[in-house]
Amino acid sequence: MSRVKNVSVLGGRHELTIEGFATTTEHMELHYRLTPPLPQSESDEENEAGNDEPYVFLAVEALDDVGNEYLDSGGAFGLSPDGSATEGSLSVQPGPYEDARSVTLHLILFDGTREETHDFTFPLEAAAG
Image (tube, rainbow, N blue to C red; front, side):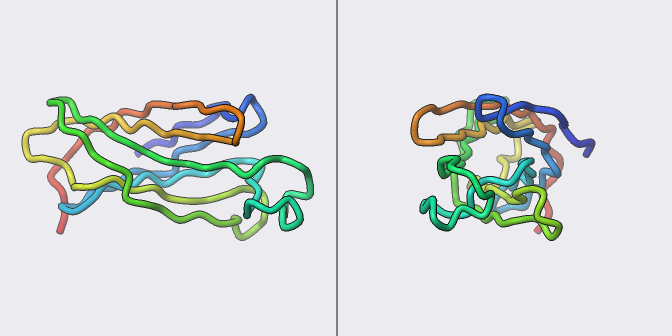
């Protein structure tokens, strides 16, 4: 899939890039990149970004074109190898229903003071294994 670039998030402090979207029969997964990197922990003392930026919580929910809902099933994130960004993935369950042709993922970002949601719609194809 082509990348979605230059989505300003968190009050313009970060840029979100969607790196990919994948489905299996059990889940759907969104791969993302946030530049500059997010704080890596809730403690300001451990903030690798070297500033007083608050910890950011990410979550995802989804709804397909026929009305089926999908719930957040976790994810993972970390500092990119070059240290310039946070790279991660978020999943929803279950995998896509047979009659669904597209799904809209609602990416939720919360920094302790404000919450924002960004929607991304993806076509669905037959899920693999």
